[in-house]
Image (cartoon, rainbow, N blue to C red; front, side):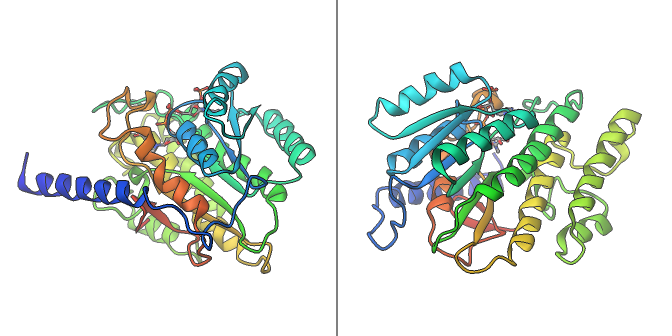
Length: 314
Ligand code: NDP
């Protein structure tokens, strides 16, 4: 291992140790704004990071709605959390299916009246290791970007007004960083437009992912200046990150008491089905920043990107 890699590894391990210490500190009464009436919805919660986020939020005493596209798998997963003595309800949800989303929103409105926290964890990636196939790029973009966006749009009307604000947390990835040193879009002009809140728009994000998908269809994507690692996945998460910032801008007009805070985070490289159980951290550790963001009592934290409880640049 090179000196730089070694140092990065040491830094990461040190930060993970710090986080495991932070996790042992209980929330004080001042920080604990939630109760068992607080409702948190987690997408893709039947396994992996989504399941862990659901388990940890339930462990903090909230009511968690574990959603799963296969209801029987969701019921089994919810049972694991219920057996710990926590409050978990379960519902079918496929974020690619608009009927499934609207059936879910109707159910939540009727049964709970509203939602305080939405964690978008559902996602797909079909590449492993050094592979970079774009065979499933449409599925990847549709699920990770459009699915997350459609779910979020459908949920905003049922996000509850409260003094502390509602929260949306998107599970994203550093691979989707716009201005990272590696793996970024080569077109500086496009990067600038996606970075600048004045020029960032939903139409621009949609146009960017469509242009990538068109190039995949035309078989010209390899010279298109797209991120080089897990290209389709990176483009999808770049879009999620950009949408997170855009949403914050759109939601900033809401008055006090109706605020919704929206952030995204990178869980790290995690031992789940998505990585073929590779990765260097467990889903339990990977869930931490998502849970921390969902429970954080700081109105200044919105439209931001985190990793290991620290803000990073988009
Ligand atoms: P898993 O593959 O373990 O879990 C993915 C979850 O998403 C599953 O519950 C899956 O359901 C669900 N899902 C997929 N498509 C849909 C859909 N259309 N509707 C509803 N649910 C769906 O992966 P992870 O837990 O690792 O990934 C969770 C999130 O973390 C993803 O957004 C991923 O991109 C992100 N992430 C993961 C990293 C890692 O190293 N693992 C790194 C960076 C980000 P089903 O069981 O039915 O397939």
